[in-house]
Image (cartoon, rainbow, N blue to C red; front, side, top):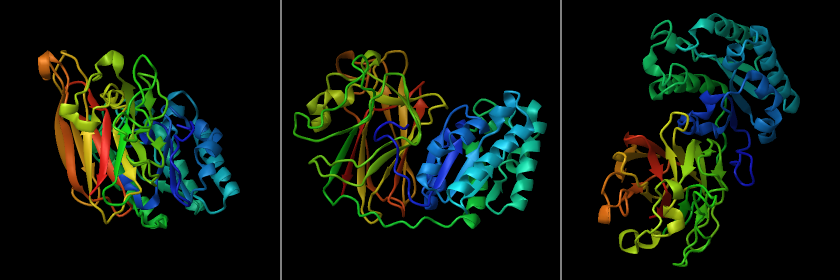
Length: 408
């Protein structure tokens, strides 16, 4: 997530989110914490010791006004002591104070889970110790992410988890409420300059997928139609693109540089050429979107470890936008349908497209050749953001090959 251009620019005085996979999988973080310009820096499997050791890279360099931390459960599961976790949290506190006195640390309590119920006593002991610290130090605030889950049972109801350990959408709804209710009275909103956004009539195109020769290709900066593209960073087929990574300063199809960023709010994996990408797109079906480097590879999601979400920021909240999405992956194994949901300043809207299945295309082709999902009249939220979730509606995987944003 720290490669050239990959890191989203942090808002001065924003909120940096650090910790383990609960942070990395938190697809709704950008919406839940919008007023605080959250920056996701979660790392799967991270322990509190890892957060303390790497805090300068994870958080301090972003000069946040607050850091939200969820870590400690992996330490305890690995056999570390309660005191070692508490000491690591103290270390984080001290580093924040040394770098910028007054920086708040929000500590999200270690959540009880069915799969780690056997160590709940130790997890609770950590939570109690952090609550005691918070009572003594105004710079640390404890977030009670525990009570709502325990209200469902002891151990908590499996219905709030994807695998007995990681939260699902229902679990994150409880988590979001606890976090918002604690952050809101303890952190001022970030001072946003209202985004101007690209002018009416602008178009921006983004090619998503891997770049290694065996699995994908990056769309040319200027294609055969004379249209400019934005392409995802260097990525190998099968690798993850992580929440918090970004394409910054997207250019329009005519080459104008904008302040629009594409930020991943939920991770994806990438694949393409060797796995059913559309290598011979038809201009009759896709028009000028028929650029093989863009249609032949894709981002995909199918595992909860890759929640599949992105955000477009830097848009004018006063403008309406059209979003066009193309998704395709050919195989006759099963029918696969992707559901896209867009949320901004108005009610969320959803649409589905069949990406995959036996003979769904011309001449027995087993993938989508020309069906676009098109959302019109989209209004960004007050911070100039549109949020896109990518989910499976049927089958094992959901896909996104390319997108086009039009300012109406």
